[in-house]
Image (cartoon, rainbow, N blue to C red):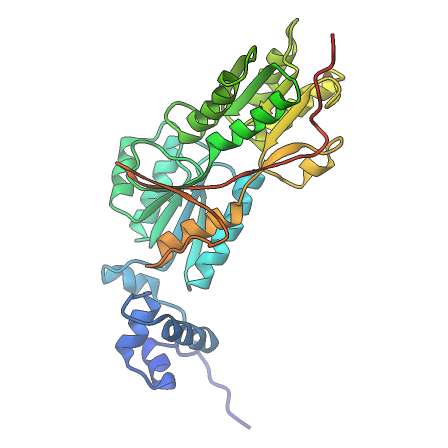
Length: 353
């Protein structure tokens, strides 16, 4: 019988992997750092061996040597929002496939909390940060991000010098508004989230206004609010509680939709008989409300995976089955992923007076 050993087991090293595979220590080291000098097939073979042998990078030692750690940060405003939780899942899968670790940080749209999270990731020498920036971003945060590998996801801030991966938001609200106008509605309101400093607020409002401007006798009525159900509830009561309420509503996020639907229920309204609705994003409950909410479907997984690849690898490939708009800006490249209108039962012609 073998005598049991005491104490901690010996840590697997890069030299152990190199000896097992019969290759040089330098090749293994470069492959695990995703060096472009090493071929993809060799990287895959080395990563597979490292995983089988239980290799774990010594993050503290790497940081002391001035190297980046194996951490990738994702700073998001709200993990309870389906949109961001789905993004986080796809990011985690992509980052893990590269042998790295995703660290989630929640800003709650608070600029001080966002700065604290960016600072801690900077101190930990994170490989990079995927960030959905807050409205009132602190100057100190933009300085930190300028000295790190960063990608903006979903929305951009003009003070952040980094690439943006987002949906074609202007097209989303344009398609939504055009759909309602084609059914005969002329009093179509828009309730969306965002602010002047964030791309989502300006882009989605621009798409709605463009569709209204193209249609004779169409009336515009819009509100931009913090994208929380409580804010949406107050705004929706104002919009729908007037003597001349809109006959249709374009909703800028699924979180805003929750507040809108609460008001519709309290007012005893039904869709599409009393009001037609088009939402944004497609959480599961959109299918279950009434006859289902007509909504904008987004390529969430593809957007998140592309953003992660921009941080983790030297080669970020746009999926061939998706036509992505690419624009070059002073602050970096903008990659806009296409959207689709998903029709369900919440839209119909306006009720005749």
